[in-house]
Image (cartoon, rainbow, N blue to C red; front, side):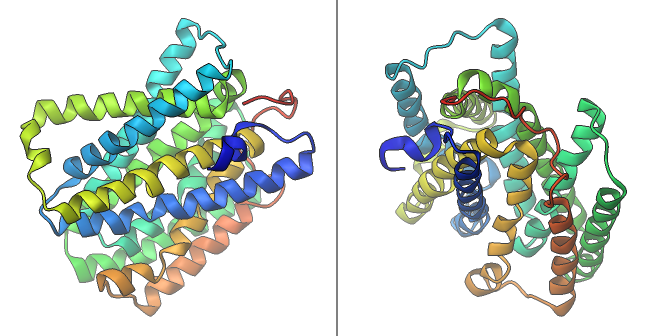
Length: 324
């Protein structure tokens, strides 16, 4: 993130802001999705979902604290009221504590291919949140697209249930809950970003997430357990913290600031697409024709939601230039 300029300021030109936002959102989605591959490798060293989360948050926390200090020194000191602090707490718990923990738990039971497909549903969740919480109208095309999305997931789920066994239900429900939690995070973050800036919000929310993870770990485990893994596990955790947490989180918030929550959520579909063959190549997971068909069906539905007029819960277009 050279110079920090890639995600700290909205461009004066709307067209340039959109291009930068699309690039940030796409890059963030690909990097963020790669955490599933890294988690599967860490599981092989005896770690479970909570161990992976704790190492990830502990190693990324210094980066987010440094980011927060940098924003403070740059003069970004807009005071938050009680309601906004409460929003930060909720976002920190929803976005990168609860959603990530549920996702890692789900990955203990389902292959990366199934996790990837369920995460395709994230844009549909943002549309539904816009309908229920923000009074947004949903077009017939969007209802059709959402129905097709869920049909495609069901198609692959039935096959995986036959191949993987009944634990698929538990894992799929956990990943589904993770996708919904992250959609809530995206939908709720838009207006607060306009108020305090994307990078400052990221620093605050990730600090809350780290604190929540630490409390959870201390209640459930002995802290010494975190020092008992092979060096390879810590190397994977470091990659997870930097490339699959710090960078994609800041990139995604930069995309939300420029494009709105709906478009940012729709770009998240690019991440799962990037993992279509990685699970088979790196993890030896089986890829079938039915899985590819289901993926194509869901992706086609998601593309319908990305067309103009399909953005849920967008940030108001009157956001002032220079907002961070």
